[in-house]
Image 1 (spheres, helix red, strand yellow):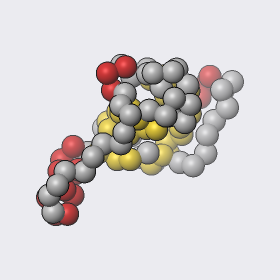
Image 2 (cartoon, rainbow, N blue to C red; image 1 turned 120 degrees about the vertical axis):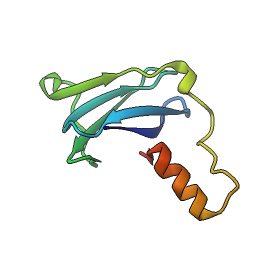
Image 3 (cartoon, rainbow, N blue to C red; image 1 turned 45 degrees about the horizontal axis):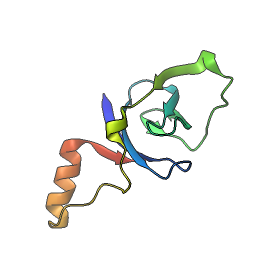
Image 4 (cartoon, rainbow, N blue to C red; image 1 turned 180 degrees about the horizontal axis):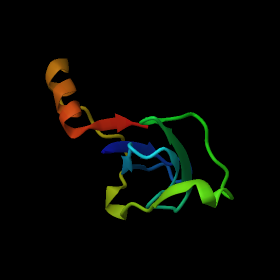
Length: 99
Protein backbone atom coordinates (compact mmCIF):
# COMPACT_ATOMS: atom_id res chain seq x y z
CA UNK A 1 0.00 0.00 0.00
CA UNK A 2 1.32 3.44 -0.91
CA UNK A 3 0.88 6.48 1.33
CA UNK A 4 1.33 10.12 0.46
CA UNK A 5 4.01 11.98 2.43
CA UNK A 6 4.92 15.65 2.42
CA UNK A 7 8.67 16.34 2.42
CA UNK A 8 10.53 19.58 3.11
CA UNK A 9 13.84 20.11 1.35
CA UNK A 10 16.35 21.91 3.53
CA UNK A 11 18.47 22.81 0.50
CA UNK A 12 15.97 24.73 -1.65
CA UNK A 13 13.35 25.35 1.08
CA UNK A 14 10.52 23.77 -0.95
CA UNK A 15 7.82 21.27 -0.01
CA UNK A 16 6.95 18.30 -2.23
CA UNK A 17 4.79 15.17 -2.11
CA UNK A 18 5.91 11.57 -2.48
CA UNK A 19 4.03 8.29 -2.34
CA UNK A 20 5.97 5.55 -0.54
CA UNK A 21 5.25 1.82 -0.63
CA UNK A 22 4.66 1.11 3.06
CA UNK A 23 4.54 -2.67 2.56
CA UNK A 24 8.23 -2.92 1.61
CA UNK A 25 10.85 -2.64 4.37
CA UNK A 26 14.10 -1.06 3.31
CA UNK A 27 15.86 2.05 2.12
CA UNK A 28 14.37 4.74 -0.08
CA UNK A 29 16.26 7.51 -1.87
CA UNK A 30 13.99 10.46 -2.62
CA UNK A 31 15.23 13.28 -4.86
CA UNK A 32 13.92 16.80 -4.42
CA UNK A 33 12.24 17.62 -7.74
CA UNK A 34 13.50 21.21 -7.61
CA UNK A 35 17.18 20.98 -6.61
CA UNK A 36 17.90 17.19 -6.78
CA UNK A 37 18.97 17.10 -3.11
CA UNK A 38 18.66 13.49 -1.93
CA UNK A 39 16.56 12.58 1.11
CA UNK A 40 17.32 9.14 2.54
CA UNK A 41 14.57 7.30 4.40
CA UNK A 42 14.33 3.84 5.91
CA UNK A 43 10.99 2.06 6.27
CA UNK A 44 10.45 -0.71 8.79
CA UNK A 45 7.14 -2.44 9.48
CA UNK A 46 5.12 0.28 7.74
CA UNK A 47 6.79 3.18 9.56
CA UNK A 48 9.45 5.70 8.53
CA UNK A 49 12.31 5.30 11.01
CA UNK A 50 14.66 7.97 12.35
CA UNK A 51 17.67 6.20 10.89
CA UNK A 52 19.12 7.23 7.54
CA UNK A 53 21.22 4.98 5.34
CA UNK A 54 24.51 5.96 3.72
CA UNK A 55 24.64 6.84 0.03
CA UNK A 56 26.96 3.93 -0.77
CA UNK A 57 24.49 1.25 0.38
CA UNK A 58 23.01 0.58 -3.07
CA UNK A 59 22.36 -3.11 -2.34
CA UNK A 60 19.72 -2.27 0.27
CA UNK A 61 17.92 0.29 -1.92
CA UNK A 62 14.23 -0.47 -2.42
CA UNK A 63 13.23 2.56 -4.53
CA UNK A 64 14.93 5.56 -6.08
CA UNK A 65 12.12 8.14 -6.29
CA UNK A 66 12.23 11.23 -8.50
CA UNK A 67 8.96 13.18 -8.17
CA UNK A 68 7.82 15.64 -10.84
CA UNK A 69 8.61 19.34 -10.42
CA UNK A 70 4.88 20.02 -10.36
CA UNK A 71 4.74 18.55 -6.85
CA UNK A 72 6.94 21.39 -5.48
CA UNK A 73 5.55 24.36 -3.60
CA UNK A 74 6.82 27.14 -1.34
CA UNK A 75 4.56 26.30 1.59
CA UNK A 76 3.19 23.31 3.50
CA UNK A 77 -0.24 22.08 2.50
CA UNK A 78 -2.82 24.19 4.23
CA UNK A 79 -5.38 22.60 6.49
CA UNK A 80 -8.92 23.29 5.31
CA UNK A 81 -11.10 25.65 7.32
CA UNK A 82 -13.37 22.94 8.72
CA UNK A 83 -13.77 21.34 12.13
CA UNK A 84 -11.33 18.74 13.44
CA UNK A 85 -13.63 15.77 12.84
CA UNK A 86 -14.05 16.54 9.14
CA UNK A 87 -10.37 17.40 8.79
CA UNK A 88 -9.35 14.08 10.35
CA UNK A 89 -11.71 12.14 8.06
CA UNK A 90 -10.40 14.06 5.03
CA UNK A 91 -6.78 13.20 5.94
CA UNK A 92 -7.67 9.53 6.52
CA UNK A 93 -9.41 9.30 3.17
CA UNK A 94 -6.41 10.78 1.36
CA UNK A 95 -4.07 8.63 3.45
CA UNK A 96 -1.79 11.65 3.98
CA UNK A 97 1.06 11.38 6.48
CA UNK A 98 3.57 14.15 7.23
CA UNK A 99 7.23 13.11 7.09
